[in-house]
Image (cartoon, rainbow, N blue to C red):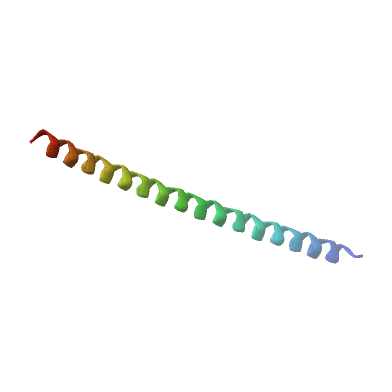
Length: 62
């Protein structure tokens, strides 16, 4: 194996590593996006629950 082949092999290895790292970054972004969506949904659920409880309480007080 010549020096040229060694450099080509190393270049290919580094390119493969870069592709893998890019994929991991994309997965992390997807996970963060999903968590943010869940957080917004949880906040919306909590708001709706609080509004419902407030309506129920004000309905009983009258």
